[in-house]
Image (tube, rainbow, N blue to C red):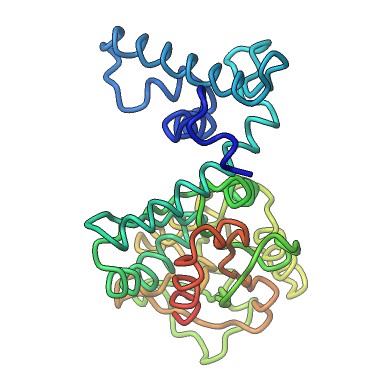
Length: 312
């Protein structure tokens, strides 16, 4: 039981917090340098020494003479072992729950971290979720991180993320909970002044005259789009390739046309029109809000926040 290690030499919340910092930043040097000026070499060395000592003390506490290795010192930079990652995850969840408790009883501030793609942050989280968070939880600190799918899953697993916006099929595991559904329905976007009059229900073939902005590379969306034109006996007039859909949306304001989720319309000027073209449903993508069941057991407020956001 926990009574056996409370107050023992080598164990403290401060040491656990240090382990969490090292896990988050990928090594002792990176963790020690966080928040320090590059020129402050003395402070960096002192903090590195402190972090190394604290982790070594935790290792001795956990294993005595047969100490448990939390840090793999055979590689540079040193990184946490699987045992170190596991202890960091448990510690991070416990400390986050403790932080929530203090915030609810005193003048502390809760913090919520959501990971998602940049387009989802700009088109769903910022305009729709953030206002709800600010109204329901005044003073809460919100952090929105642009992350790839695999990094969101890892962040939910290790506790560095509270929530993630992901496709439902990605998280078919018992350790995760999900709520809400946001369907990105794709439309054809174009400025009014650069197009001749389109029919009320334009076909894909009607659109091949327009200069298109698209995502670079051969991703699922672009491949499906090219297949759609091919079936219509047409060819997309691609004239601009971008690294993100938010860049594609900006290009529409610069007289390009584009196929984008309907959420993009809220961030565009009134001069932009959007058309739902038959066949574009093959591009539609569903997103759901996901979180770790274990982390929510430490932070009950996460389920309350999830219920709030799922109603967006």
